[in-house]
Length: 253
Length: 253
Image (cartoon, rainbow over all chains, first blue to last red; front, side):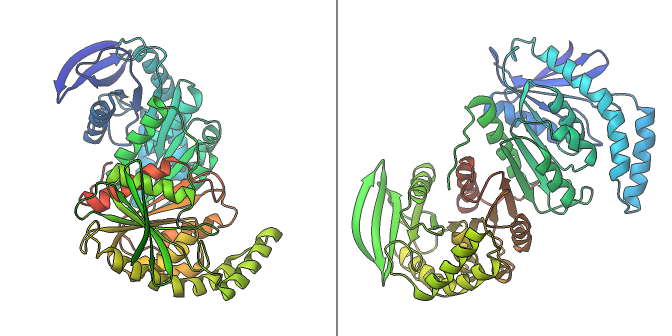
C-alpha cells in the first residue's frame, strides 16, 4: 500500500493510496492515535471512490464516530481502465434500461465478471489497512455499499469473516442469493419502495435470504437513487451498535 | 381532567388522571417548565396504560428528549370495565388463534367496535392535555402505537390534524386501509418478518397504503412481540426529527 497524497479538512485526514493497481482512499480523524473501527465503503454503479456522496458519508463516520473509513475504485470505475467484458455487458444493460426491459439476467452475468475481480481486491485492501497503526489488526470492521456496492459487497462479506456488520440495499439479483444465505453478521438493508431498477419483490426476497439473526429492513418511498438523508444517521447508529457497543438483541415490546 | 396521584422517579414525573370515565397517565420531566412536544402512546392488546413496556418507553422519551408523554386505557382494558360486545368478539378471535385460523375478518369487526369508542376518547384526552402548562395548545404532537395501538391509532391519526408524526406497526388489517390512505404525516412502520398474527403481505400492503410522502418501513426478524430494543431509539430519532427539528427530506445517495 503506497500513499500518494494527504489532505486534511474539518478534522478529517484524507489519504489517497494505491495497492497493486487498485487506487483507494483512507479517511481518518486528523488527530488519530491508536486503533479504531474501520468501515469499508463500496461505491455504486457509475460512481467512484471519491464520489461526493461517499466523501460526505466518510466524513460523517469519521467525525461522528471516530472510525477509519476506506473506499477503492471498483474494476472499470473511477481512475481504473475499462474492463472490456464488463463494458460490453454493461452496454447491453443500458440498452435494456432504456427500452424498459428487465435487466436481471444481464446484471447477473455482469456481476459474475465484476465480483471475481473485486472481492480479492477488497480482501487485499483490508489486509493492508489492518497493518496501519490507525486501524489495527484485530479491530471491528463494517461494510457499507448499496446497488453495485451490494453486488460486490454481499459476496465480499460472505467470504470475509473479519467483517462483523454490513449495510446493503438497492439490490435483489438472484445472483446474490447463494452468498446472502451464507451471511450471518448483522445486516441493515435499504430498499426503495418505488425502485425503477430493482423490483420490490426481488429486494424483499434478498432481505429474506440473509441468514443473519439480526437483520433490519428499511424501506422508503422513492426511486433507486432517492435514499432519504436520515438513513445516513441510521447507518451510523447501526455501525456504532455493532462495531463499538456490545450487540444488544433484547426486545422492547 | 382530574389528577389523582403524582409520583416522581429518576427525574420523571408520573401523574395519573381521569377524564370522564377514562383513566390515563401523563409523564413529563420533573422539572418541566413551559410547553414541550407531546407523544401519545397507544397500548397493545392485553396491555394497559402503565404496562412495563409503555412505562419504559415513556421514561425514555421524557429523559432523552424532554417530551411530555401520555397514555390512556383503551375501552375494556386496564382499569376499565369489560365491553360486552368487544369481549364476545375477542373470545372468537382467541379461539381462532388457538386453532391456527386466520383472524383478519374477526379482528376487523372487533376493531370497528373499539375504534368507535376509542377515537373520541383520544381526541378529548388531547384537548385536555393541551390545556396544561407543560404541554401547551400549539405544540407538536406525535403518536406511537403498534398492534392494537395501530388498530386504534391509524383511524385516530387520520381524524386528528394536530398529530404531525406517527409510529405504527404489527398491523395489516384491511379495516385500516381506508383511514391509512388519508394519513399524510410522516410515519415509521414496524413489521415483524415472522409475525404469527399479521401476515407479512398484509403488513407490507398497509405500509403501501399510507399517503405520507415520508414513510419508512422497519422490518425485523421475529414474532409479533419481538420488536428489537434498538427500534426504541429509532423511534426517538424519528420523533426528534419531526417534533423538534425541521423535517429534512433531502436525499443521500
